[in-house]
Every structure is written in structure tokens, then in C-alpha cells.
Length: 66
Image (tube, rainbow, N blue to C red; front, side):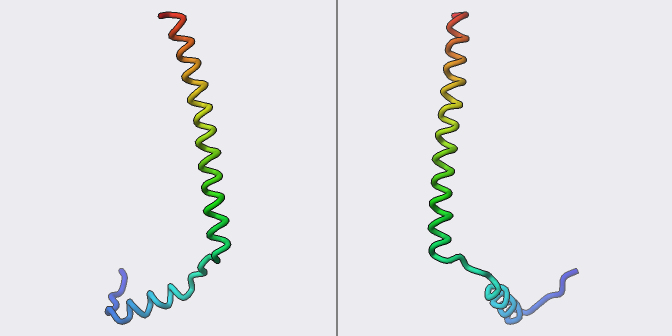
């Protein structure tokens, strides 16, 4: 069972925990943002080709019976 803390103690604990956080540098944020955009683009291209392959295969299959 957790012990109850008063609001002042809670705020002090929160400030203590926030001070332990290691914030990323501007360069790290920019690099990770660029990497996310690159990976999202590569994923979109991959799924475009997968969709194209499935669509072509289904069109050919349905064309044989239609």
C-alpha cells in the first residue's frame, strides 16, 4: 500500500525526478526527427510496392476467371 504524501511533498518529489531527466540536445532531436522521416518514407515505399504486387496479382487472377 502506497503512503499518502501532501501536495507540497509531491511537488518536491516531482521536481527532484524532473531534475534527473537527461534532455536531448538540439542536434539529437534534429537527427532523430530526420531518421523518423526517412524510415516513414522507406516504409511507405515498401508498402506501395507490396500493394502494387498484390493488386497486380489479384487483377491477373480475376482476369483469368472473369
